[in-house]
Amino acid sequence: QKAAQNLKPVVPIKFHISSRTDTGVHALCNSAHLDIQRPPGKPAFNEKQLIYSLNYHLRPEPIRILNAYRVTNSFHARFSALSRTYIYRVLMGCAHHSEVPVFEKDLCWAPAGGQLNVPAMRDAAQFLLGTHDFSTFRSLNPETPFQSPVRTVFQVDIQPSSGFMSHHYEQRGLEFWELKFRSRSFLYRQVRRMVGALVAVGQGKLTPHHIKELLERKDSRAFPPSAMAPPSGLFLKSVEY
Image (cartoon, rainbow, N blue to C red):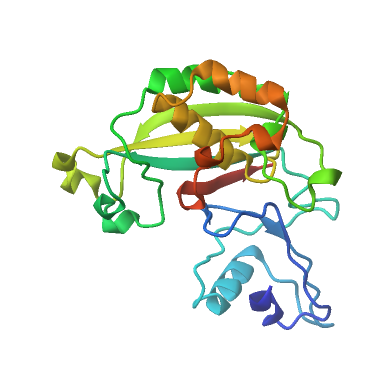
């Protein structure tokens, strides 16, 4: 928003962003919309000019504008979204946090333990698909009383992945996994709770059927406090329109 104000609009600019994230969560891609009104006689920015100008003023920040599109007045970055996709990165094989590769610091979750029982996790994930009351899988916040706990999860995938430069330390026996979730929208910390519960299943601390039981409880306080995944492994991958 500050970068856009440097473009000297006639009316102060307000960014409307598609999704907010917790502190410590990353975004590979996010979307926002803005209206920019130039002084009389000045032509409207085209897409390339807007990308170049905003990135010029964003140089000190860990953010870059990748694309710009002209949209209709009815478009809204948050409410027009059809779905949002999140990726969560898990690293297994570390007995201690000091064993996490330095280039992966704050970019994954490394719970202690050996291999995950991935087939059990995939069985558990089936209970999360579809439309449910996800009250157990949300953290409470000031918006909770005004927000429906019902959400529809379109996709849950669990796939092996690779770490940054991981081919150079294959001998260390580290395993990266990506958990992908897609829904029109998610509740506060819903993805982090779903990840934590699925990892607990993979470690044998919960059974796949426990996930169904947690859903049926419909009570945020029923969620095991130790099963919340930290923000560091979570990435907003994309917003679909």
